[in-house]
Length: 291
Image 1 (cartoon, rainbow, N blue to C red):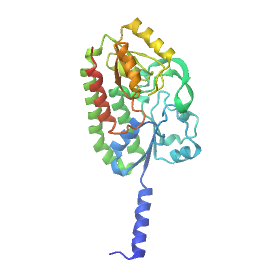
Image 2: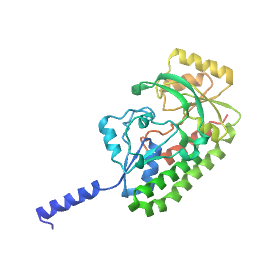
Image 3: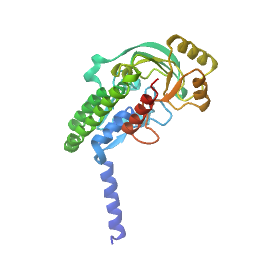
Image 4: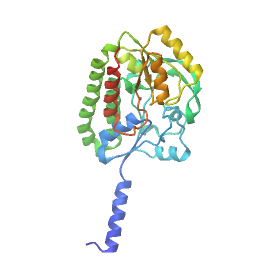
């Protein structure tokens, strides 16, 4: 048995070793999940966005920025996601824009300004930023992140190289599953409560028209009336919610002839499961809602 002094020294050594783990900071959950898959227990993954905040529009405090600045790799999504990253002083040598390799495939969007919970008023303008909802693009983002981790953290290069093929295989399998399972929804108009699904629509041949509803909230009367107009104009029978809505909202949508399906884009960490398991379940739910 270790004596008290030896035990204390051992504990201090263990704490120091833990603190010396390389850190990968990520601006959204998909990138954090990829970093966790790639680095395993050899890295600490920092995803500081609080639950309930939208990572697209979250504004980090000074202490958050200071911590992110110290990370060995700072994984950016690109495509205008997390606008604060363009204003903060972040070390360029540690940044990786994971979607830069397919920036010519970005989708331009219209400008719409509205309020979004605690994150305040914001605009959907310029470029659609939820790039990972095209799962083939997500695989390319994983490859870009892996390359940056190998370059910036040589100690984990071999383990990252070993983990990458399985991660890419999983994302490519998800892409194939989406292509197969969503075919029956092609040729119909789908309504969505928020403009998050541009890359999902393009990748899998879907026509998705977006509303501007607060995630998980009960729409007001004007919003319901706008939905009625959309249903009458499009013949839509399927409504995608960004977050689980109140039961009363589901019932009211059903009264309009709409089936409700929750498809969380997973910019934030899910309460249960991980990116792969949750997205597979959501694809299954979406396919099951086929007219």
